[in-house]
Length: 291
Image 1 (spheres, one colour):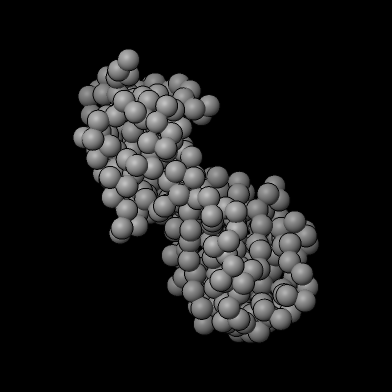
Image 2: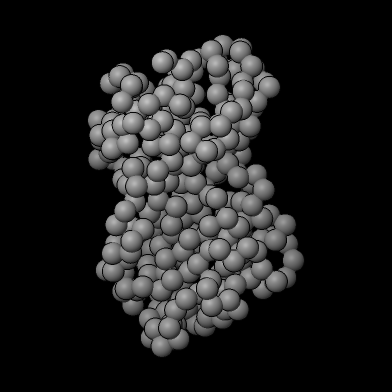
């Protein structure tokens, strides 16, 4: 599933392409992918202009001049593909997004704009969705009411992160990081990378962390998320950026998918184990578990 940097990269790409475009028509082939009343679509989506593209956690928001928004969750295999006479944008599998005719068999929703450009929502496994809601009511969705703060927000610091993680003080720090109600958008890749950067074993209980470790974890998490956004995300199979380039972060990862290789910090062989029910990569020397 895309994590915060991947969805942020999609947001940046769409944010350059969609604002100012007016919706002419909408077609869909799978009601669960587009669970919206036809009357609402005609009244609040058709003829509306895209005002802004935003992100909250792993969810995209396309805000419209009608005071409604398209709330989009890509889930496992969702793609957003924009095409115009001048531009080809692909956020999904590179072979599906930038070559071949669209719509194809994976296309669930097609939004056509007045200038002839189109936005395709493709989803092979049909888990993703695109919901049309009043913009003012988006914050009332269960997901938005429960999701934690953004780790890259200007008003979020290491002390805030400490207090959020301590909500799960008796669980492993990795489990707490993966809990979207604690902090938004952090998944398996960036949890492993941040914990390596902070020299913390993923199975360490939250209440066993010192202030210095909390501070170090915050710094490492922010650094790895920012680097991944700069590199266009990490997903090397189902994601390409606005210019069709696949996310390259994994080329710079220190431990994720590096089992059997030398730790870039101390040279010890990186291992893969399971923590919080997830495959977990770590350096057994840099990240010793203190009991």
